[in-house]
Length: 307
Image (cartoon, rainbow, N blue to C red; front, side, top):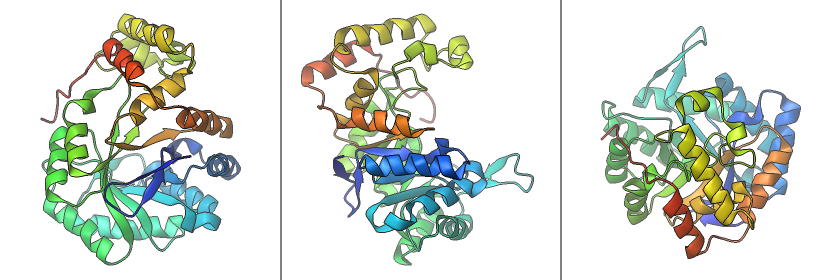
C-alpha cells in the first residue's frame, strides 16, 4: 500500500485508511478487521471519542498496541455525551478539548495521538480558542498534528487561514463532488491534505450499487440526485468503465486522482471487506480519459449551505 505525506507534516499515511466506526463492539471481530487492515498495508486508523461512548477507541488502541510505532492513529473531539448517554452536545472550548484528549489517550492506551481532529465546527465557535487548545497540545507532546473534520466551506476557510491544520476530513465521492469547486483547490494550494470519507456514497458505488440503497435513499434519493438520476449515472459509469474495473475501484481511484487527497477512509464491518477495499485502492491509477468520462457523467454538485 502506497503512502502519502499528510500536509506538510512528518506524518505519512496509507492511501487507504480504516474508518473504525464500523468495526462494532465485539473485541474479536474488531481485532480481525484491524489485523486484516495491517496485513493489507493499511497504516492509518481513524476513530473518535464519540463512537460507542469511547469503546471504539479502546478496541482500536488494544488491537494496535503491538504495532503502535508503525501506525498513524487519528481520533476526534468536540462532542460530549450527556450523563444518560442518549445524546450529545457540541463543545469546541479549549477547556473541553484539553480534557477530552486525556480520556482518548487513556482509552487508546498510548502516550500520544498522531492526528487529533476537531469533530465538526461552526462560525459561532470560539475558533481562536479552539486553535490555541490544539497548538498547546502539540507543544505539550500529547498530539503530533491536528486537523478538522468538516464539510462546511466557511469553517474550512477559517481554519485554513488561521491555523496550522495539516488535514481536513470531508465527504467526497463521485456522487458528491461538492469539494471540487472550492475546498480542494484551496486546500491543495495551502498544502493541507484532504482525507476523504464516504467514498462509496452509502454503498451506491459498491458492487451492489442501487441494491444497496437504504430506505431513506430510495425515498429521498442522494444529495441533488433523484432516484432515476442515480440509476442513470451509476449504470453509465458501469457501462463505460467497469468492464475493466470494479465499482469500488472506480470510486477509490477517482478520489485518489485528485492532488489534494492524501487518503481515503473507508469503513468495514468484516475482514473480507477490508481486503476488497485494499485491492481497489492498490490498482492502477485513473488515466486522464477515465477521469474525463466520470466528470462528464456525474454531476458537479455545489455546497448550498454554510457559505
